[in-house]
Image (cartoon, rainbow over all chains, first blue to last red; front, top):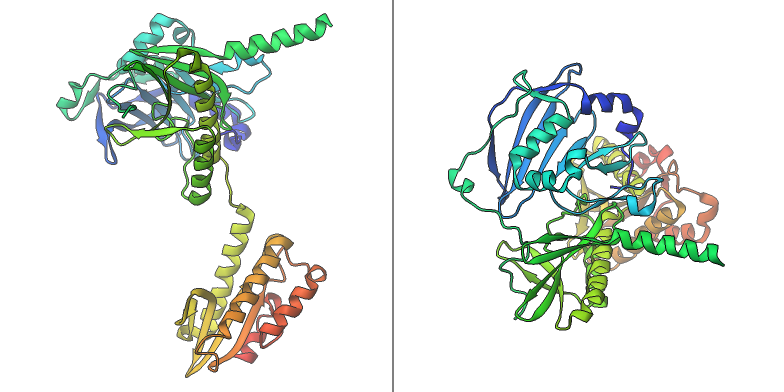
Length: 190
Length: 271
């Protein structure tokens, strides 16, 4: 939303700590389940422990089955209502309304979504995401996305610089090959 | 002169750089330079199918990939806006196997693709923006809700089960009175008036006047002992000097002077 996040604006240092200070995931593997109201999406929310902040923080992983698209988010409801840090593997490009020239205000996916010190939402690509080859690998592979997210937001797994395994509770779902073409098999012409 | 042309060139270059693409199997995603109120650039997808070109939103609008905070209020306004935009840009719809709605246009000549992209992209901007905008006046909603609650509690405390809230007369089911008090065969109609601005306050007054006018046509009119209004004289919209003639109209329809909220005990003398 173009509305400012006042929680972030008024507690910017705290928000930075939440985003980038060391955190730990104690659950391994992460087992995704189909969403109740949408069989095309898998989801799992897991608890994350922060090294210096004693708050309920959740790591949310959501993955679409039919197409290559997934999201990874950090959520701290006591701090702010919406997830405060996100990774989108696909979807619309974001416009960063900054003082940069117009042509530099566009940030395509895959990108991270966070907030600036004014509480304004903005998107950015890490150096890894700026590399077309690395970006492609991340787009097509949730495991790579998770490890990159963990690197970016300083999350350890069971105290080590390690990454959790991602599993699915219904094994048949693993067999589904996502399509790359979003207009596949649709009746546009009568 | 050159300086101005340089400015133009910078603008044109920047606008052009915003337009980019992604290859997706047999489809081409065009990331257009048009963005929504919540700062997402609109994408359209192009695919050649049976000799025709289809330009579609890939269901992104229906799937809310533009990440709008969905709320169910103002559904009717939003629907009208969607329809208006759809008709203006001549947009067709179809559903995929999962039931997702795709908005699209088609053309046979590749020369027509840019115009179709332009139309579809602008449709998406308008449609998504209509979902982003909040239509209800939150301050007004809060004022109405709070006053109603306070007045309801006050009446309930004093009249217990004799008071029914949001009640209509049997023969005019569409007209609800904020409170209806019954004592044996006597009916007392009560209407609340409040507003966070003079505009809303006056509207509320008008509603009360009309409702009481309609009650005069009810078969129960001879049982209606009192028609009362409780007006919130502590509301931001209460400006007695501005109300003038409309208060006279209210007095024609009510059986007593309006009861100010700050003097609400007066109602106990009447009922």
